Length: 109
Image (cartoon, rainbow, N blue to C red; front, side, top):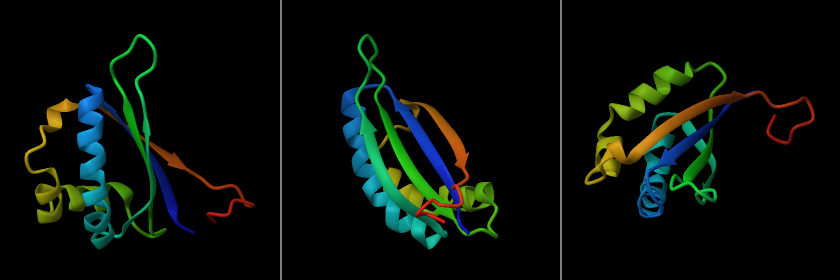
């Protein structure tokens, strides 16, 4: 069974959200080279009274992989550097990572 992770990126503005959405589309093949599968990427506009929109990504790792080790390998890779070239990572306000365990009847098992 795969290990699933919900990654939530909080960004500093709507414009940065659009830019980061484009970067995420480039991340998908590079992450796959590092055994990280992307199942979906969603955007969430800023809530009323807030200027921090979010990008959600559902990814999975092979059941025998250490998630942080796989992620760090990708972040240190030439693929990641190429994907993020020209983007100021400081525009990401926060990154939250949640490990998700599918229920026995989940289609993702």
